[in-house]
Amino acid sequence: MRTLIASGRIPPRSAPRSAALGTDSTLLPLRNGQEIIARIGDKLLIRGYCRVTKAEHHVTVNANGLQRWLVGNELIQLALPDLSPEDREFLITGTSPSGWDVLFGLDEIDPFDLTTEEGE
Image (cartoon, rainbow, N blue to C red; front, side):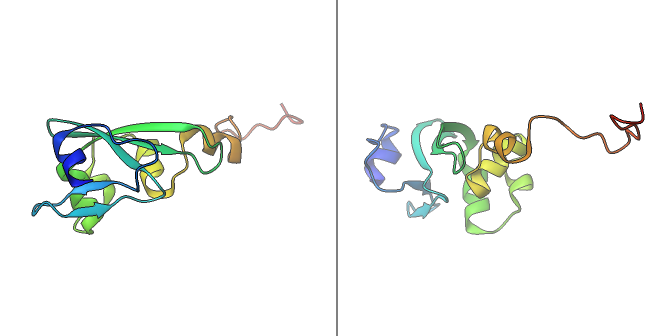
């Protein structure tokens, strides 16, 4: 598996859970069954399946930032500041943006809107 990740080749879908390369070429496990499917320069393409919708979701991350987060040296928002909050949440929980829509609805709630459907 190390050879596949280091070479940037895409592992088959049936490959075991993949991981980020550590500084000493050790592998650090990803979470929620996610796997690295490609490496281009310092970027990693991660594929996972949403826990709610079971749909495939992809996230591109900085390899060094991912490693710092996985090791526990940094909070994810500091280690991967270029990721959207939704993609960071996918890495943490395995729930994609569409999964959160299914769980909590599509409508955004405005906490400053004091009108109600009945009293408009």
